[in-house]
Amino acid sequence: MDILGYGAFFLTTALIFSFITLGLNLQWGLTGLFNVGLAGFVAIGAYTSALLTTPDAAGRFGGFDLPIAVGWLGGMIVAGLAAAIIGVATLRLKSDYLAITTFGVAVVVQLVALNAQSLTGGPFGIGFIPRPFASLAETPLLFNFANLGVVAIVMLVVYLALEHLSHSPWGRVLKALREDERAAVSLGKSARFYRVQAFAVGGAIMGLAGALQAHFVGFIAPDNYVPILTFQVWVMLIVGGSGSNKGAVVGSILVWAIWAGSGALTSALVSPEQQARAASLQIVAIGVMLCVILLVRPGGLFGDMPRRRRAAAQQPSLAADESGVS
Image 1 (spheres, rainbow, N blue to C red):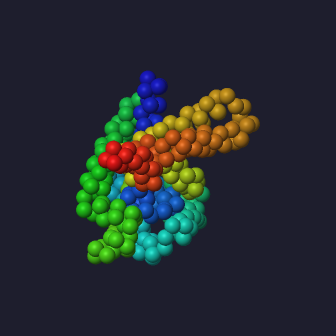
Image 2: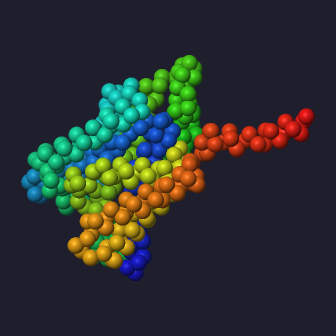
Image 3: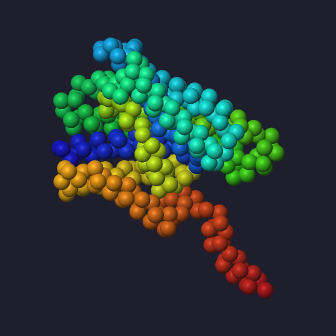
């Protein structure tokens, strides 16, 4: 029973990471927007949902005691609006300049959460956040499986919606902007308009992930949204395959399995005095896996083969055809 309960807990956490990776895949994989401030949008969604649903019991922040579903929707909307506003101001920047700007936004969000104590609880965070199926908390197995079912249903809805969008005319415009912006603009497409839309939708999905995580754990604090979260999600997308929604989900589960497994292994084999030093082995394990994936499949497990490699692979067949014709 304990193994089944942990398995459900593990899958729920991995699926929550999958939401963040899907949002990043929409921004980077489809549109080419280099966002390294995704932790900020996750934090916005988490704090918005917590403030909307948590009663003002501790007196440190104002809660509205609304249903959990309203909190999830509110987290999506606020994070999406924040992403849209930031996108209007910053998406004229490209590549590394956009990355620096989005990273600065994430730092600002964390600092606000850390210092606005009357609203966010400051470094102590927000506790006693309502959890779905709280009545089942005394039975961990049922509680974990019930939460897994809810998260899986929401994941299925978001995944199917993103699959539809990526194959729609809107998604084809995003891919065109990613591949050749000048050609897309020459056909009358507004690059800035579509990029702001993609950035906002991706930010909303990240906000939903933060809201789900907040209610699944029941507690949030600024320390939950440090830059290591951005590193984890980027590795998940690269391993799964940029541009593939399936790769985003599979990569999230695979990388989280290695991250959690290496953490459990080191905690079991290493003395408590060396836990902090052993924790770095998690990053080492992820780094080694990333190097192997990039060497074996540069496009990730489910990503498209890079165009240069595809062209090189086609050259021998073209030469054979030419020799046959001659």
